[in-house]
Image (cartoon, rainbow, N blue to C red; front, side):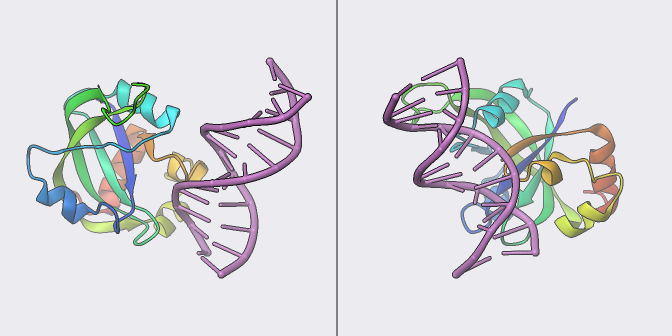
Length: 138
DNA sequence: GCCAACGTTGGC
DNA sequence: GCCAACGTTGGC
């Protein structure tokens, strides 16, 4: 099963908002980057990912799960961009800060570090385990 | 608030 | 199809 990381500015859509959306989840729309879009197309229902707060917070705060596969975004007239539907699974006991990620040799190669602007990223199994460990599990 | 990195746009 | 210019993102 593949793992992913989703970035969101907490002022726009925070972890608390995601939790409040409940088990039905929310359509992760608004992505207008082809690479991020392709990552979401590759996702399968049940794939888990990290929820990352950018700008204000700069930390991995929780785990989300894909509940519906990629579907076109009705707001994109060209029909090229779309999104998956995500629900909150559980918060990390301790948020894993970007500064900690950068100094952990197991995480230094993360896309989050190498290409910080990509809004939907793949996460390797080793990185997944390392962050869960730092976060005290979920 | 600044600026680097990256993606996209548009002229040629 | 190349590449310069521009806009946006996001860390600091």
